[in-house]
Length: 115
Length: 111
Figure 1 (cartoon, rainbow over the protein chains, first blue to last red):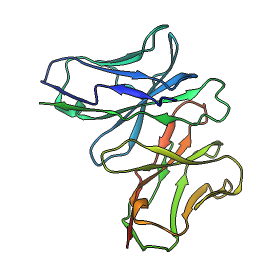
Figure 2 (spheres, rainbow over the protein chains, first blue to last red; figure 1 turned 90 degrees about the vertical axis):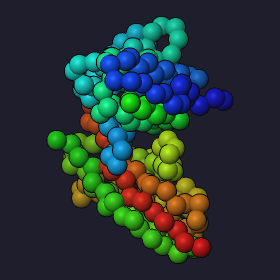
Figure 3 (tube, chains in turn orange, blue; figure 1 turned 60 degrees about the horizontal axis):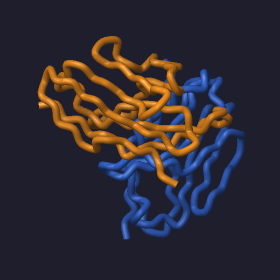
């Protein structure tokens, strides 16, 4: 049973470029969450999505960041015009439908480096 | 501002000892609590969840919850060097969406 998959695992971008991070949830999971972990800081919630819907984006920066979870395919976190401060580990987590207790399982993460 | 507080450590214990990790949270309405383990450079791994006051045991791990005191803890019995990692306390936001994480406690188990 495959876990949460993320790609790429490492991504290097120059300032001003776009970064696209992909996440495929665990089989049977329909809820996806994105978190960011800055160096020496804790994990911070960014956005919560279900298929074709953004449920909670309260942790997402208002500009340059967007997320989607289409009917088919992985969830995508998109960062436009990246800046050095975007360098971080971005983790995706998934949970099963029903939200009974909302145990979230994390993928391996994408380490974004902005030069 | 909903917060989760943990001592950053490092917490150092000898092999075979009990490691005790503590966490307090500010949102009195929180109902779901989790402990994650994160090795350096890796992703968080869920090791325990707890939803009711009292103790919950799973192998060498025991989670303890006291909602009145807004306190949750993790005990690791018979600590092993492989337990050396950062332990993250997470509280589910009352709205039932985001996990709010503490900054983690670094545990070092010496052999």
